[in-house]
Image 1 (cartoon, rainbow, N blue to C red):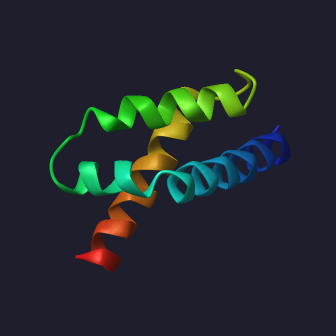
Image 2: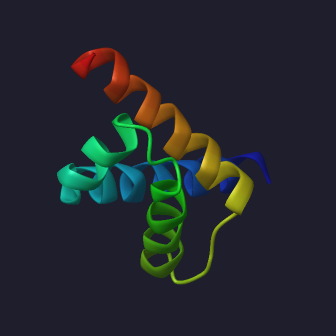
Length: 74
């Protein structure tokens, strides 16, 4: 069970990285205060994972990645 969760987390992390990398203008919009962009990213993650993902985990990973980008680009 723990191994399956780690595999899912790694899978979702790779999708989050792809999505964030693919939409740099949306990242800019998010950094400028358009927090609704998160829903677009979550839709992309859902689509790319084939609906086989835990939304809470995906959201946590996405928010962590967005925060990291704010620090790096800020």
